[in-house]
Image (cartoon, rainbow, N blue to C red; front, side, top):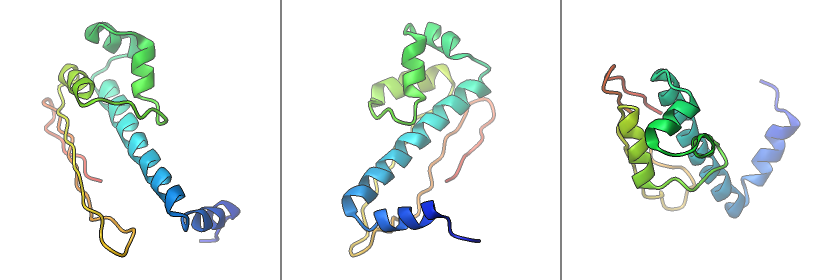
Length: 120
């Protein structure tokens, strides 16, 4: 596969530890946002309907589902998960010494209805 200018740029930027850390945090926020939106859609709810059930605003649900949002609290994620018949699973991982590589993660999101497990 041919490398694009962006591929080369990203490879260069990832050499900077501060950039690499920001890039990884952004990916984590993206994961949370996508999981919340997918669970809500699987439940057949609009953002407005989920907000009504949580006694909050549609704008707050939109914020939670935004990849750029990093203000998720554990308590709030549990409230949302409860309405969506899901559970919250948090994994803290040690960094490998001398390397940016992470231990392989397996996180599961289970729904009560389907008992499905999502691995990443």
